[in-house]
Image (tube, rainbow, N blue to C red; front, side, top):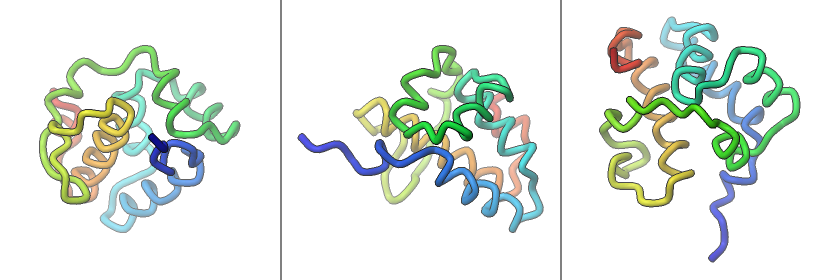
Amino acid sequence: MTKHRIYTMSFASVYPHYITKAEKKGRTKKEVDEIIRWLTGYSQEELEAHLENKTDFETFFAEASKLNPSRTMIKGVVCGVRVEDIEEPTMQEIRYLDKLIDELAKGKAMEKILRK
């Protein structure tokens, strides 16, 4: 089976779109980074290294050894698909991130986005 093309795209190529989406709604790059760090367990330095190295999405999530256990509380629809029903683990992680960025852009409080 062929991998979805998002797996081979660099995380750094999509990251600016996350920032733009958030900033258009009055949110910040700092909040986007906080969400990514919360989800993946990366430090800010590790996140920046992945961006600089143009790590692909598959590797970005495969190397995230401290994925937040609370991420399974993320529910809802992204691109017409329920994130909780996605069976492929890497695609589910990507969609979790998409859902969190959507929630940020919709003005949801960080405490709720980070499932506190």
